Image: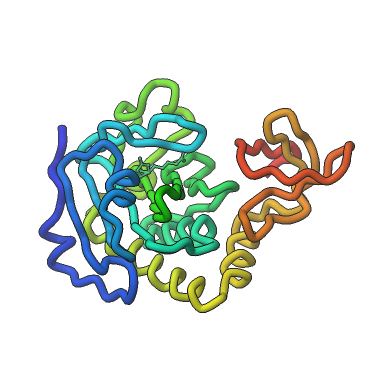
Length: 246
Ligand code: BTN
C-alpha cells in the first residue's frame, strides 16, 4: 500500500541550490518523468512523480515505478551538459551515505551490497536533455517483480530504518547541483576521475555482452575502453560482469 508522498517534508526543507530546482513540479502519476521533463523544459526544472505508468530504463527496459516506494524524478536541461552520467551516480551515493554505503557501477548504476537500487537514464530530444533518476527507497523484497528479487534492493531494506523520501530527494538534488556547477565550470575531468576511482573498474577483467577484456579506462563520454584479444574496443552500452572477483 502506498504510504503517500511526503510532499510536506520536501517543501518544508528549502532547496539551497543554484541550478537544480529552478522550478519543481510534482505529479501523482505520469507516464515517464523524462518525457515530462523534455516536454516542459526549463533549465533546472525538476519533475517528480509518485508513480510512473511507463517508467523507462536503459535498453528499452521497463522501470518498475510503483507509488509510495521510490523516488522517480527528472531534471530538464535546455542545453547539453557533458558528464551528467558521472555526476548523477556520485550525487546519489553521497546523499544515501547517512543511511548506508553504496557503490557506483558502469555505466551509471548505484548498488548497495552488489544489488541495484538506483538507475539513471540521460535522454535528449528536441534539443532538450532529461536526466532521469530512479531510486528504490522503501521496497521490501516482495515489492519487486520475482525476477528482480535477487538483484534489486532499496535504501530502507538495507538501512533497516525509515527513510523520508522528501529529505532524500532534497539531499540528492543538493549534491547534484554541486556537481553540475563543477561540470558547467569545465570540471568534467575531476568528476570523471572521481567516478572512475569510486567505480574501481579500471584494471578489472570483465565480460560485457560477447566481449571479454581488461578495462583500461572510461572515456569522457562514459564509454568503457576495453582491451580485448582482438584489440582495444570502446563500448557505450551493456551490462558488465566482473570475471576476476570483486
Ligand atoms: C536504468 O538503470 O535502466 C535506468 C533507469 C532510470 C529510471 C528513471 S525513473 C525517473 C526517470 N523516468 C524514466 O522513465 N526513467 C527514469
